[in-house]
Image (cartoon, rainbow, N blue to C red; front, side, top):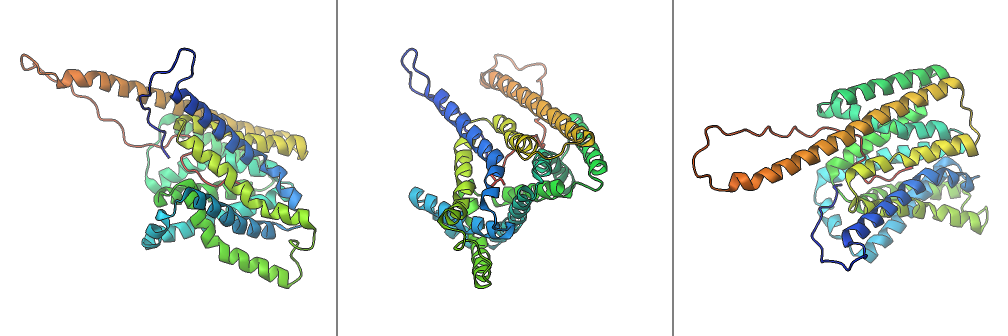
Length: 359
């Protein structure tokens, strides 16, 4: 996912907003909509009770394929499917991604319906920190000092929360690590958000359908026994999964990556607020202390990412300004040529790069 490049548009009438400004505004609106929907989704899962987490998960996987398949049918975007099938390695990575996101979705649904909304929100707060740690350990990426400080602060937060809970916050850690692993695999697959979800849910579909049929044969399915409204809500799990992803895709091509990196915090902020204010979950002092450390770490990451982005833009502008001078013929050979230091290699910044299906 890369920010779209700016293009020169035709002049507009005085007082009329430029096409680029309209596109940016639409992108920002879609980004806010996507992360707000992901943040408010804890209000939806309890509506599906008395269905258990496994039944809700199976319906989500099955109906998501139906919805995303319909979107792709309208857009007529099917060429990627044949190409994917002919690439066994990418197909295997998609299978891994489908397995990991299944664990993430199922655990999140269970957490919300078992009064662990706050702990689940923590998982998505610490996800950027876990992503950075995985980049260092698995990809041998280098961190700047501020990023090291943020990771250390995040580790301290986990220790404080473990003390407060009396055990490690395993729900938060499992959600964070599963989602970070999912993002890592998706970077290797390199598929668009809607196409990726279609491929993953296609792999999930048969196991999900088999589980639902097995549940029905045992007389334990709620799909046909709790009324038409309940059945409609279960079918809407596909819409709840797909619509925010479509909005995210619209935002990803219109707003800078740094903006998306800031918007990503809307989802866990909403989830945390719902857990405390709506679901009335307990927040003893040690839990506040742990969350405070996490927020401090995220503040450090965000500040460092924005500072680095500004420095990179300034450097790119400086190089662009120097380029015509370098190309112009010089009347006499210069006494010494000033060397331009190469740009550093890619490093992790605290922004979300993958249009991944959120909880």
